[in-house]
Image 1 (cartoon, rainbow, N blue to C red):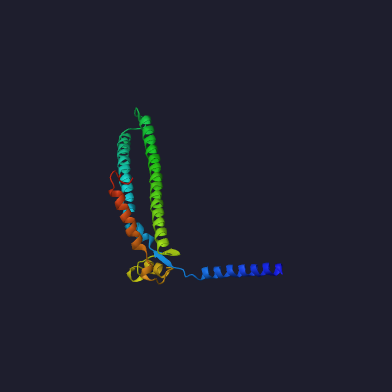
Image 2: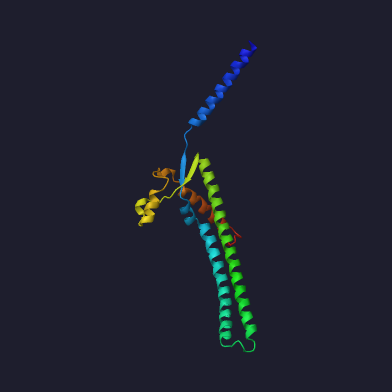
Length: 203
């Protein structure tokens, strides 16, 4: 009799767990869409960070340009000499050394700028991801997908039309597009931070 009671309780528990699982599985998914390209394009912080990097690159290019002018002057001087001229070998060696130094410095700068650009994209992406998570949890979205909100009718070249036809999202309810809402939140948050006393310009 005791075994029968235990068995009955076990069966009831298993059935109960199955019912809970079935109810959980029956809950409808709520899907949101976001145009990440549009977010990056219109997020003021991303624009400011890239502008700061652009100015830094421009400053470095001016430095390199000055060094190149020095190389040109040295090269012109060398062309006026012959191999038997006094100091020719020294000038030739100096020219080669300067050219190699400038080339090495340019490569280091390029790697540094690529690293900084990559860091900017990473920083902004993480902020966007965090904002999307907050928005989705608040409005009970269970899934957020990337999509391109540009209408196919707005594409004016063959490649754009083909890419548009290959999009994963064929139709969506405009209410599920959270791009503008996320952008508004990010820009308001950034503007408050940028306007705060003691705030420094993006590097």
